[in-house]
Image 1 (tube, rainbow, N blue to C red):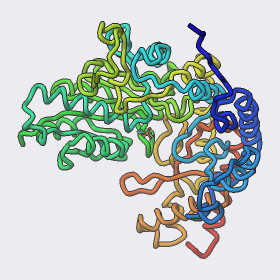
Image 2 (cartoon, protein in one colour):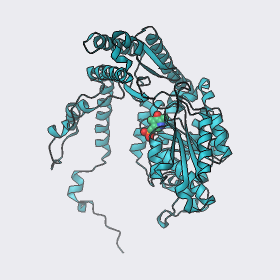
Image 3 (tube, helix red, strand yellow):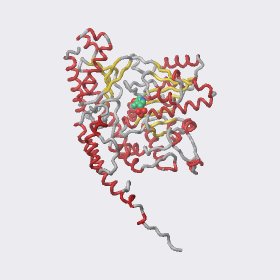
Image 4 (cartoon, protein in one colour):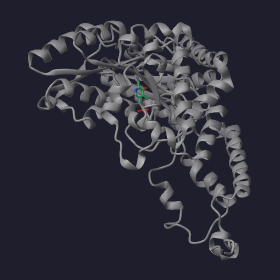
Length: 510
Ligand SMILES: *Cc1c(COP(=O)(O)O)cnc(C)c1O
């Protein structure tokens, strides 16, 4: 009996030459990337905020096949600087006011780094117990911080899960509602299921309903009005439901929004949920952007009535300092989700699951594999603390108030709807344009003028903002929330907007 002879010299020499996870190389190159990004943040204001490249620009400057021989990180980073950065729209720029923010932070980034570094695949509890347990813990922490009713917390039978995006969260909840309903009524009635939304609901709901197999003819879009600040009217909802019942349809799902994408309007949750309850409809509350503000007690009034909803989601990657992707979804009845989404193949069998002692998050989402996203939220919550997180949100809201004040002082502009959070909707006043030319009696021309203004501002590269169209009116959206934005950026942005408006008003265009 000899001892087992392990001969390291037999290791494949090719493998020895390149170890893709050599700890010392990881350390050296990792530091380089962190330094590179720190420089990027430091110098970010030197780039045009919205990328100015033409379609296909990159194909023209990179080789048309992958290199045969290895290239150094130093060389690759030079190319990132020369070829990639010009093709970026700089979401972290303090002069980024477009869409909704994607608020970065050191804590969010470091949490992401830890998550990527461990690179565990936590589909069920045993595949990485800390990933599952930390996720449940931070979802309860965050839920409490938002003052969500206990019924959404694990302690009281509800619970939260981290998804990639709101679109996925909506799909999972529609599928949960659908299967719950199809257990009550016969499957033959699938084609009669109806989903309700307003004309301000995010378009991802339509996509989710489509993927869930809802008949496109049964996607009810309830019109909103300027008089009601583009909120979903409970009376109209009731009428739509009654009409569907008369037609023999089956009301299934309502999406209410806290902070709509175009104007950040807030649907009246309490009355909508009461109607939905009366008819056994699942209510999902989409608070993708504005939900984060509800960590401040002064915004929690917008959640009044949420105890009667079935699910609630917000994007921590929008306004909660976590990197993309990090959508937080809470449900009152997790079994509705797991009944619709669980699959238990032999290869994943394990004792903890079988004894029903654990959460297997694969059953709460579309995909099987999942990232350890909870680290991001955990780092954000711990590194800044509730005090600073509230202060950051409030500082964005205060900057938006300040911007609103600047607009109000210039009579050529009008604020289109009252500001609720940190986004201001405005446009050049049609009254002012009509004094210049009668052609502006036509609303289309007013829209055209505002479109030209936005295009002119964005092409100068000093800031980036985007538009919305509500009830046929083109509005300019100014969303504050990039982590590097200060008052001076808001003031300069306003000056740039005024300059471009002056130029257009003085040009022959009008
Ligand atoms: C941004 C946004 C969405 C879409 O979020 P994704 O995570 O990109 O799917 C949905 N609803 C509202 C209100 C939003 O602001």
